Length: 305
Image (cartoon, rainbow, N blue to C red; front, side, top):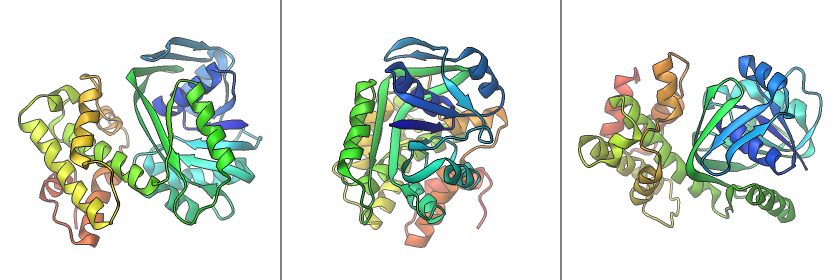
């Protein structure tokens, strides 16, 4: 199968780099200085799992340059870019293409599907700490690299195709789960990412500060409890306690890690504040759930009723 990675930041480059390192057919859509560097020199990944990967023959294109069609399309852009990439997905898809969004947020696949009539969009989430440290160079921290994907209720996809994708990712060294309850799994991921980003950005701290007992960890736990109330109101059936699961993920991360949202805020770039914080407040309001800690942090970042 031909794989296409749309968005070649830390997440997209890590997925595509692992695929390419195992001789899979994979293309990248990137932009700016990162794109130009990859075109000239290839992609380098400093991986906690695979060591140093030097991939000089990576195929990278701008969205305008790409003229091929892909079988599996991983969407690895920021949540605020969904509307911008819809025309790109339409352009690079054929009638049997499968789109797998791996983005921060809840309900992303359904929202994308509503704008992509005729294109098969499922849902997914990823657990990884990875970032660009220089054009064409990625750092993937630690041993946590897990992809969970699956079909929403009412969506029919050939199970052989789904298993083929899963096995390909596993063969590349990526822990991959084919989920039968993807709505709950994507919300569970969001229930970690959102509190971690909100707490880290509010206090301007690293993951290590939240790993230690004290105010920061307590705030993280309070945010987890609030978002858990939303999940319960949505009647999602979780196999684990959301707060306990999020604490385990938190404690497994490199202490020096920060969320991509926090990095963007500090760098003065556009950040996913709306999708990771404000969307939670809106959803809670619609469901009649009280989330005072989230609301306090949302107000700090400019949320207004």
